Amino acid sequence: MNDPLTEAVCTVMADAAERAIRPRYQHLAASEIIEKAHDDLVTVADRESEVILSEGLARILPEAAIVGEEAAHADPAILSRLGEDLCWIIDPLDGTNNFAHGRPPFGILIALAQGGETIGGWIYDVMSGRFCHARRGEGAYLNGDRLTAQASGQMPPVAAISLMFSSPDRREALQTRIAPHYALVDIPRCAAEQYPRLALGVNDVSVFERTLAWDHAAGVLFLNEAGGKAARFDGSPYRVDDDRKGLIGASSPALWEELAVRMEGI
Image (cartoon, rainbow, N blue to C red; front, side, top):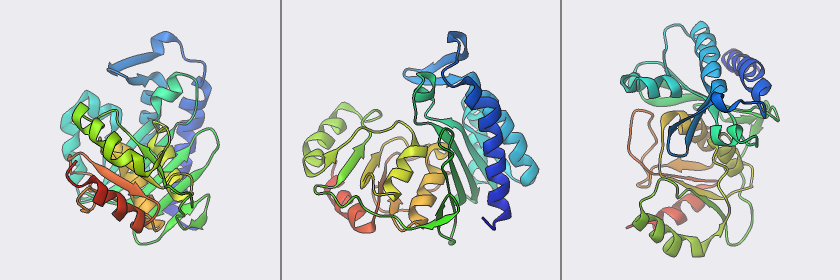
């Protein structure tokens, strides 16, 4: 891998997977699954993984702030740290709903931001061991090998569009004005799976409404460094300290532009 930072982050992620996540897969007691909000779950594995990751990342860069999904849910004031000079951003178990129901995909997402811009992203698939990472300006990698994003080659292009967090009017507009131009597929409810799909020729485009930093910081950097494109609907770059909604991801800039034009006015 020849990147000491990535090697250290990978070790911490694998440790959290081995100690907190894998042992509980398909072995969760009902009392170990909690509904934070409607259709938004957290498990004992999420919380234990976040503790392990936070402690491990603090040893790697003690000077960096840490924003974990579960810590931020407990204390939203933690979100103010996202714009600090250095900040680790942790999704300790992405795809919790899948995990809690005993099915893949699920993974771990780690990002490192500097002044609100992501400079490092790491995506770990807990069950397969697939490891994706990117450093700003240094390209994207899959299991240590340089990766260039590729489209599916299908016509119409393959689209995974999340409608869960859309208003009824917006959902109807997406279905009537966007869907007819694409082959729609189900979303995996796991950003740690969705972004690799965009880079690996499985999906061509995705539309995301909710764009929380722990879900998207690592994947956006990974896709952009692979030569795809992820950006806000207006084309502006994704920043971890920007709480606006809306993001388009695509396996190529051309596919991104095509969908962005169709999205105008929606």
